[in-house]
Amino acid sequence: MLDGLLEYGERDKGPDTAILTVTMLILMVLLIAETGSLEKTQAQEQVATSEIVPDVFLGSFRILCSIVVLITLSWIVLDKKGNEDFPLSFKRRKTVSRKVVGPTRLAAFTMCHFALIGVSFGVSGTASLIHMSGETVPDWILVASPILFSASYSCAILVTFVVTFRLIPNNLKSGFPVKNFFSWYEILMHNGNIVMLGISLFLNGMDVYWYYFAYPVIFGIAYVAWAAVYANFISGVFIYDFLDYRVRGAPLIHVVLLVIIGLSFTVVFALDRLIEWSFFPAALLTLAMTWGISTLREPVHG
Image (cartoon, rainbow, N blue to C red):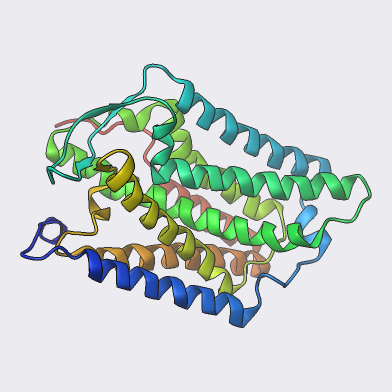
């Protein structure tokens, strides 16, 4: 069914896709304005401390995760060997092989969401350090930390799910190699992402409110716009074929992707609420979800 949606029809669906995504963006901005989520601070103790581990451990964990993200993304940029991928050519409208080296490797959603994770841990880690110093954490950090966490965790679930159930199977079906998905940094970004954020969920008591839903959706819309700019003016390719806004099913595909981001947020929201009810069932459910959507080993060809 998806393959049919990825075919080109008599008319490119670019205008339809643009209208849809702009409408969704406006709705999300209105939701943020209506709920006033950018003005609601959580308590300093909620954001900067933990009831499970010493504050120094929480702060160190957050800063360490942020450093891991920075090192990983820097490695990707500086690695002279680069990587081979199989994007969709904007002009030729078919999959091509290319060698990618340098900063352009950061254009993929995987790297963008991983950078968001690094920012999230950097901001929350700063909150912990300020609190341990005896100072007052600025309000903007108390507002931003839970928003960044919920958005990054939602996007991380999406990335891991799509890589496991769409990208790897699609490459295998098309006869393309999948070994690039199993380098150490790819495994870290596709699987370690939800591990780090899952641990963070249990160590800290930040609340995830339902109206934070708008932020991962806006991040997804921003990436859709970036993918169009990247294909038109920078690289000439769509890294992900399903983000080609011209194909017959583009409007539906974009709706489905935004719905999946929303469902990913719903998972984060539900886990946060479950933790408040009972810690151990929440831990088991998070572990089961993490294991169920992860792929740590290259599939064996039959």
